[in-house]
View 1 (tube, each protein chain N blue to C red):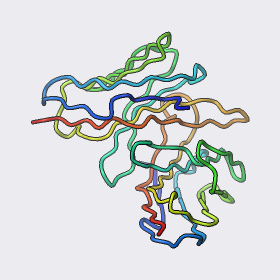
View 2 (view 1 turned 180 degrees about the vertical axis):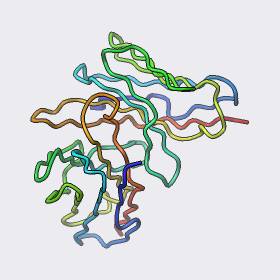
View 3 (view 1 turned 60 degrees about the horizontal axis):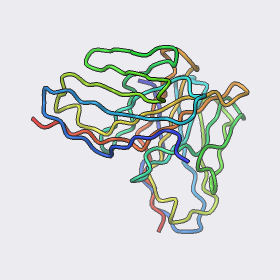
View 4 (view 1 turned 90 degrees about the vertical axis):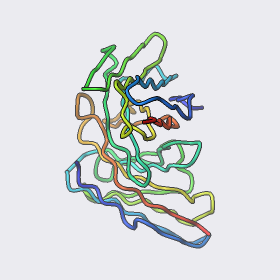
Length: 115
Length: 115
């Protein structure tokens, strides 16, 4: 399994405060992703990165920003947290596109509660 | 607009029988399809994948079938085991250009295998 570490694993924050979630990988994978999982919605892509400083928006990017200054780290920031951003956040990485290595490897998830 | 659809939120199957999980997609540009399994409080784990140039891929008890004309894929688990009880996500990959690609997930199907 790819070494993917998400931090923190759990967080409770107040509405309007900034929050940063961190994803750290030790596999030197090129692609990194942030998803959120909500009941009735499955996994929805927030942002993704295809290289250092190369990022793009996913399906539900409003209210979120990302940064990738190093291959191993992908940060997700909620500039001003809202209750609708209460969710479980998953980071994923993938080495290459196509062939048997296309699958993405997921972290354990971060449960974020905005009160 | 949901591009990857799993229309059955849940499925119950007797141990030893076949489990068939279905997935439909709308984007004809998808060229790689994957199935993930997710246990509670864990990140999704890759199960099996299939390229759009194939119509079947088999790995042990798991077989994925792809019908491109119908934009439909299915996951067969034979024989089903209680340990297969989990949420199964269908995912599809598309080249987003500039060397990037993203995975789009369905909402998931919760499989319960009854001993």
